[in-house]
Image 1 (tube, rainbow, N blue to C red):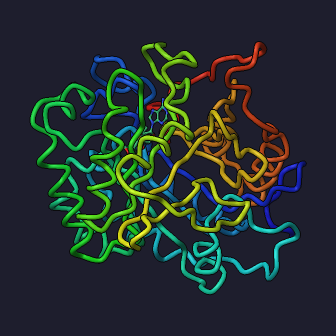
Image 2 (cartoon, helix red, strand yellow):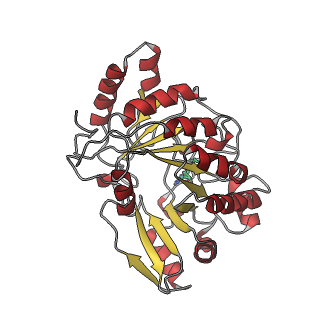
Image 3 (cartoon, protein in one colour):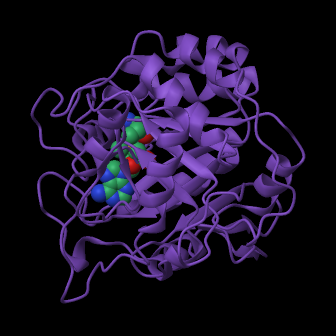
Length: 351
Ligand code: SAM
């Protein structure tokens, strides 16, 4: 059987599963200030079956996200179950693996082990880092949008989180959840002046800081082109601190990578707005309520859970998934006159 591919020849190797759309933070670029989930979540056994079927179809990396995934009780046990899934080997893929860093591709091709990653706001990570690592988590990405406690609270709209997140990052590092990436969404008027402080942070903490351009996926509908801090501006700001050298990267990489000239510290820039990379997208997502989304900006989703509820066999689920993946969108249309907002916002998709 062929590995999972869309009609543009992109190999689909990365799966993101949102295990809840609840979140304990209310970040200005993501959520409104309200509480609670819109769509709810499903028992872990449901996500596990979905993951098992998809891994059997060529998925090599599963990233848990949300909402805030660490709010879900039982997440450690779920990671342990995921780690039991054996990757299916397809040999050389029909099209080159795309949408990944070279090192990631090498790692995933050299092992039958599933690559299991987590994106978290880090608030609850300090106590969970070791159990997660022991359960089989491979790596973690922590979202952090300021390196100043007051500014951090203004963005997350929750007091007192900064110290928890810092402790979470340090615990992850200590237990060897590596590579450890810190994601910072830049939003004009909130944190564009944090570029240099994050450069210092990357060097001091030994983490890769990745700046992400703000996308129109927020609940508050405040996005406009002028709220985006584009790649060139990030580079110009950082150059005032220290010279950067671009690290040669595969066309497939979502982040452009740079190291400081003295070799200490690395940063990345993910620029989906100013430099889209849809042509190399290797992802599909499952929402917390069991829908497949083929693009962050999809205007519809596909109810995999409903297929399970009606008693579909694994073979029928595979057929359903192949049909959905075939329809994956070619690209997003951010900033274009025909842009239609996604049918869900980021917190209810799973970033
Ligand atoms: N709660 C977890 C966290 O904070 O990382 C996981 C879910 S969060 C929705 C996943 C990622 O999406 C985070 O790195 C967050 O910064 C990013 N994100 C949320 N809204 C975004 C937006 N409008 N544009 C770009 N990135 C966004």
